[in-house]
Image (cartoon, rainbow, N blue to C red; front, side, top):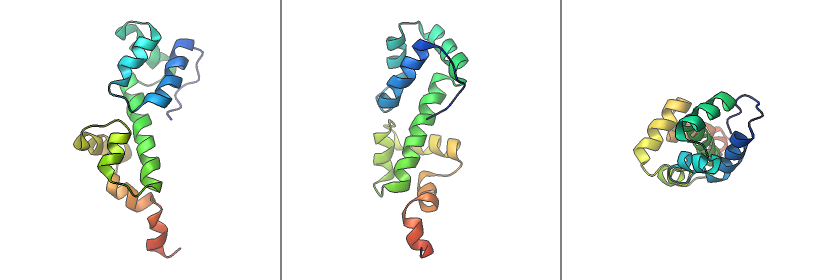
Length: 122
């Protein structure tokens, strides 16, 4: 999960806890905004100030981190992993993953997945 800046904003803390369990829902930022009771603009400003992340960047970082975990241990289809972490469009998942990690999901799996040990004879 993104670390961000330690902060004492209780509303943002509540939203961060909520998003940890709900990162894969459609439009999770609206869920956080509703939970906060703040306007979109105020929520976005407070979230960025408290965490150092824009809400969309926080969600994408969380989703990509979860996808990386799955790619390292799970041999399932990459498109399914993308859907499971919240991306309905496989192309969007691959594009965002590559932008954030520097590797495509399939190359990431080859480099860091469990099967790499078999390829290396370990």
